[in-house]
Length: 343
Ligand SMILES: [Zn+2]
Image (cartoon, rainbow, N blue to C red; front, side, top):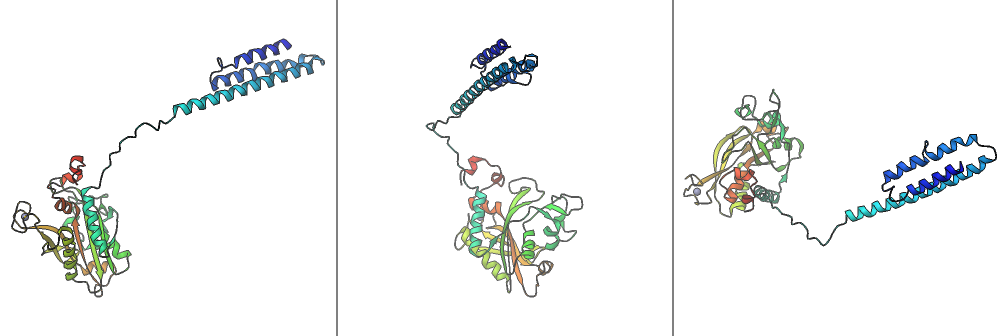
């Protein structure tokens, strides 16, 4: 048995050298082979019972020595392998700080958002708060509470994107639901603008898109009149297009305002004489507005005998198109860098 133990010690120590135990897996296989539960050393120890009483302690001590020697050698080899692996990883992950960096291509603001920021600046300067609202909206807010009841043509399936068969949940077709949400949640007096995406079933062409942007504006206070509406919007137009820019207000109809109007701006290109840009009119339609309908105020819990208000809605794409003299709406959404880089 002594010879057998000596043989195991010799063979195992040889096996643990770098050539045969090149990886952690090799080393583990060797550990199982020599020191495992069914390993060679254990097999020898199982035969101890057959030894005489004198031999047993001698062989037992020797077996322990062999086990300790093998365990120590194994541990040493394991540490060497771990150190080598770390060295290898450090070498592989080394960063050469002298290599020139990658050039990043920096973009800039989209022309439509430049126009929006200008509008926001003007209104915030006049004490308005900017609100954000849901694009998935209830028909109750998009229509009912804005005085566009059942049967109103804008509720038609051919105009509006509904999510359900009974036409209660929809993609908002205007930013006006934010008027109602503001009236229901904010303290009076209210001065807000609400920019955002809106959706209508329009075919894409040079002036239409099924998704576009509006900016809604609303003021509610005691004693607010049409004169405040005109004064505020004229100030906005002068800040956008320069002092002295003329506007005109034409009567119109919207369900949620009474009286309602559309505001035109004198053509910036021809100064009102008539040209291709204004289709010979001398004026360009800019926005819809009006005094908030007393019914709309009442539905939102505001007493129309005490409070009055005005509201407007402006198309953001058209504002940007006028501001930057862009002829085709599609250019705004196509993300063609050759176009966008110009602004
Ligand atoms: Zn013109």
